[in-house]
Length: 449
Image (cartoon, rainbow, N blue to C red; front, side, top):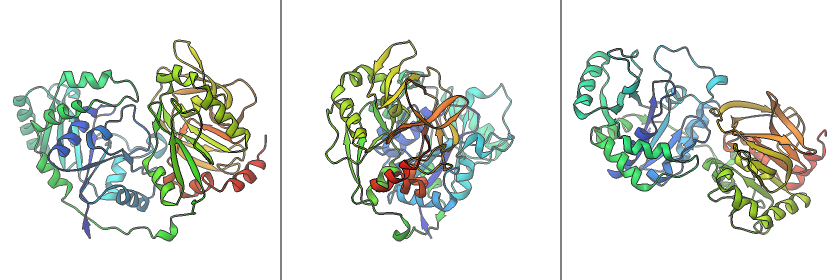
């Protein structure tokens, strides 16, 4: 038995936004010397990513829809350095609500709490309370109050909830309108300024017992068994993967990139905004999601890199892209106001931005044709991002579609997906995805056009 500091923080109000409080909690913990590793209970990218600014570490994921209980435990062990505190963020099932199904929610914070024996901090948004009416008592080890009107108001509500629910209140955060306005003003994909973290941390610490939260996180033992090295999968020491990484493309699962390196692959980053060629000896070009719409003009002007990508595909080599990366592979990108920009032209299609995309939803994709991701009928689990709609302008292979929307498309050895996959959560899919090039070509040659 060992101790791995860990705690879950989640709202109990459907659709409530606890971003300010969670960022403030991370900043307050870091300020008192406690290093924090953030996890999300769903393996999909948030519109705003503050963990790196607040703690210096990228967000990781513990998803009960993608991982087994043991897989979650191993992911927690791999991702949390010694002495760090694992903070798992999500939404608890609202008290009294009907049980959720995997198909509707995907990763479930309540399930992860059960699997990993996580202490639970429930966030009560006071702006959601109607007069003196309280929601049903949540199943929690502690409470955090959000949008508190004043210090006096905090103590009044603390006394009320502790007496009625019998759950200790560990702290709270005031309205802090100016700080929350900064969060609201951030564009999707834009990093928050560092001073915002300090301000949010101070706002939370004023009415919170941060040391008490640390003690709660350290209160439970954690038994574990590390996965033996021999089951980690194939060796990819000969594989060279070029990762598109700059302000336009930066949404990757850290677990996937670390899996690549742990198996021997060489990762080299390049910038579609600045570089004119791909890294030497590239086998696979990997575009994660991002926000190419914010840099459409600059991407359009870098025709040297676009030509290098097309030549890479013409040479029979592989390209894979998700979300915003898929939009960049298309011939053109169309913004909600109707403006169009030329993109790389790897895929004969137009990427049309949805100005008001719904939340990402769990999606089980099934390959219609064989390609180097798998044979026909292969199922892959991820989260569907409806931010981009793909409209063919030429001969385009459609490997999955739903509701009239194209979710996985390809041409030659280039594949683009509207579904985000964490390949580290599916070792079998990872072995297909990063298979030696000769094997990938053999599988692709068997596809039905």
